[in-house]
Each structure stands twice: as structure tokens, then as C-alpha cells.
Length: 85
Image 1: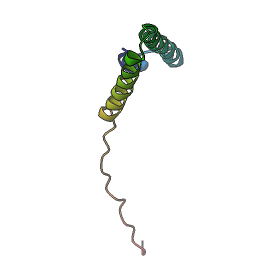
Image 2: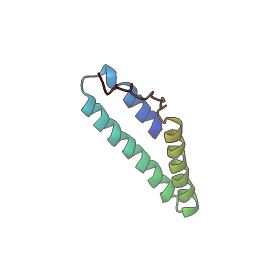
Image 3: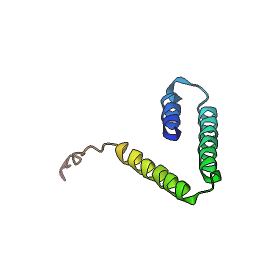
């Protein structure tokens, strides 16, 4: 849900004039939902459920970052300039 909201917000940036407002509200909404979910799991009273949830979130974040890595293209070297020109 967190990363889906981030993707949705970023995809709407081109079509809105209030980019800062969109990103700010999206950030706070995503953080509130994430922290509410973590609090709810923690409130169940078992660290055995909270720790794997936190680790899963971090692993999913690493996976998303790895898959969304920008593709780098190999640049050709700049043309050599002659000393005599």
C-alpha cells in the first residue's frame, strides 16, 4: 500500500500544478497508514509478529529499489580533437 501510493503520487505529478502539495499530502498519508499498521501489529502484543513485519517491509523496499533502478546506457567517448585544428 505504501509503495503503491508512492507510485500513484509520482505518476500524477505531470498532470497536476500543485506538485509540492501532492507530494506532501501523499507522504503524510502514506506514513500515517504505515505507522497505523505497525502500531496495530505491535498492539497485538507479540514482538514475534512485529519484527517479521518490519523486516518484510524493508526487504520489499530493497526489492522495489532494485527493480526500479534506472537503466544506464553506455556512452561513447567524446570525439578526439586534433592538436592541429
